[in-house]
Image 1: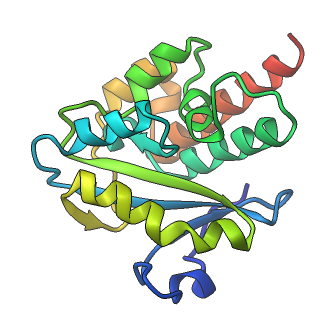
Image 2: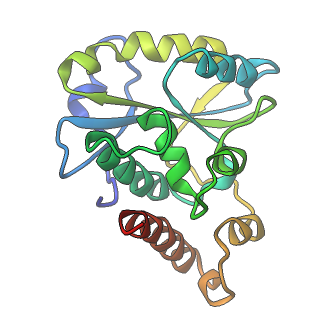
Length: 204
């Protein structure tokens, strides 16, 4: 995927949707979009309520922003997730959880959720919802309302700087000293490791 430069203007102006809703698109799958929203100051019980909803069958991405360097990191993982979703090669239960799995170079599903998923006491989170076609997009307002009413908190820009710790990121991705010399080197190395995992998986 290419780096997202702005929001989707058509969908952003739809009724009942936030005017600054952020969408990621996929060149090979033009009918699929990943819609993202980011929240801080989540009140006590908000994150655990969302997690309970996910365990009950609600599909959504629920990420810890402290494990992310840039939204492009999510875009790359999501592109892989969409590919395996539409070719019936998913490792996890749905395309949303597949994004979380693909964010890590590790092959342990539980570890990927521990490292990148927002926990029950999270005070900030990145939420994501996939749609495929106009019929799915029409359901977005209701899907967002169900999640945000549980979560609470204050919404901020998806592209605001992520509050990550470079040492934690280096550990998550086994980054060498050279790969940590700058934020761009770091992001490029992370994207490479995410992509390499997908390539290796195809040859297993």
